[in-house]
Length: 205
Image (tube, rainbow, N blue to C red; front, top):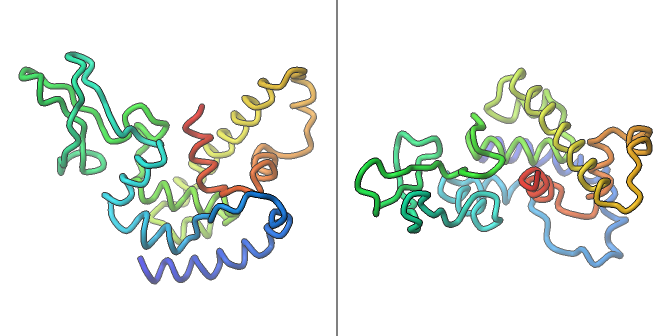
């Protein structure tokens, strides 16, 4: 993981230097952005730290209530579970409901590990090519293409959702935009932490 982190970090630094970060210095958006080193060595250092971070950011549930008895469900380890943990009800003695760590989130039913999803998201939102992402992650090239397409669709859906919230929404104006959905999304969020903003936007759909 460390070698991979060092390899990607050098590329990440070059990519970020070419951005518009200096245009953001004068604005009051000075919250520290997540860098690749922090992602790999802190957030994704283990499955547990990854889950804790996603919970703290509201991207997966912190609390789940049993649909049968309405009691709070317990979060516990289960080796066979998709992320090694499940939500289960201790009050229901017969066929207690069980849910994954991703229950109710946009991550539910996604086949990648949480670590790979976060790493892919970071690299994709920071402009890494599909070949670079495939090289630096555990993902096959076809999977990278599939996820890239899904993320482009998410950008398009977010763009449409935001446009429809405006008073004088005009479908023709949205369609006539010269910017691709990805470019438009990145332009809108250029002064923010694009990694975190994308995760939040995806979860909002």
